[in-house]
Structures are given as structure tokens and as C-alpha cells.
Image 1 (tube, rainbow, N blue to C red):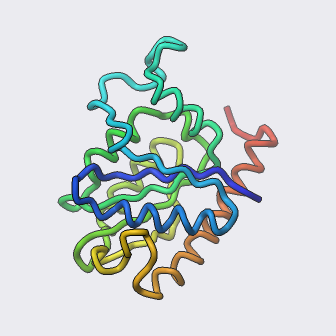
Image 2: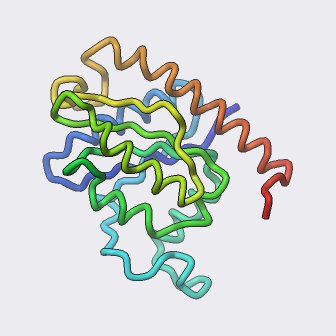
Length: 193
């Protein structure tokens, strides 16, 4: 079943490596027949959060927030691509996520983490999980952690190391299972409130 999957990138640094991880996972989702849409905070250029989308009177939110709200309401799940900044997540990612809440409900999320070092951003993934759960899009047990991203992925997002392609198979199999299960439940009117 084709899924609609926003891929939310967390970095706005000028020399960011995360765009390669986003391109990698976008390509893998599309190879499986899914509609994968990049949500790039650099392109969005959202100010520091002052008012959530839901706090605007109907029809008065900025157009970029209206577009995101529409995308998120139609989404079947979310892939979050995060760097590790000081053992946590990038501020641009947190800011991008915080603009919404109800639009995430009853949809799974999964995490692609990366770093320049050997830990692959796993500490950011650990810090991100309770945030995603609180937002109503709990993260799945598996993460795809990419260490040494500068060498591991090419600029176009293709993997320079075979293990990354291999690991993405199980990672996306699990994500599809949860996304399809929750979609079936939402389509059947099965949300508790």
C-alpha cells in the first residue's frame, strides 16, 4: 500500500551533511512506491516559535504552515532525520516540530540519525524519542544510525557502504508495518477521541 511520508530534516547549517541522509531515505521510500516529501527547515525558514499553527485563527496562519498542516494531516507516518548536537537534537528540528501537534496524532515516526563521528547520532535519537511520543507520533524501536556521514553517503544520498542499504531494508519494513496498521485503524475510525 503506498504511503505518504514527510521526511523532516533537522539541520540548517550551511555545510550540513544531513541532506545526504534525507536524500538517501527519500530515495529508499520512493523505491518502495511511497510518496516521500522533504520538509526542509532551511527552505521553510520558520522563525523561532511564537505561535503554534493551531493558535492562529482559522485561515490566518502563514501559507507555509497551512501547506505543512495539510501534508501532515494526510501523512501516514513521519521519518525524522536528525544530527546530534551536544548529545541532543538540533534546534532547527525542535522548532520545526513544535509548530504542530494534533496533525501528528496516531501516526508512527522513525528516526534516521547521523554524526561525523562513530556513534551515528544515537544520543540524539534517544533524546528525540520522548519528544515524538509526547507529540502523538511515537518512534519505532529501530533507528537507522549513520556514523561518519561525510564518508558514508555521497552528495546525492547514495550509500558508499553496503551495510547502509542492507540496514535500511529492515528499518523500512518495520516502518511500513506500523504505518499501514495505524492507517487501517484511522481509516476505520478507530482513534479513541
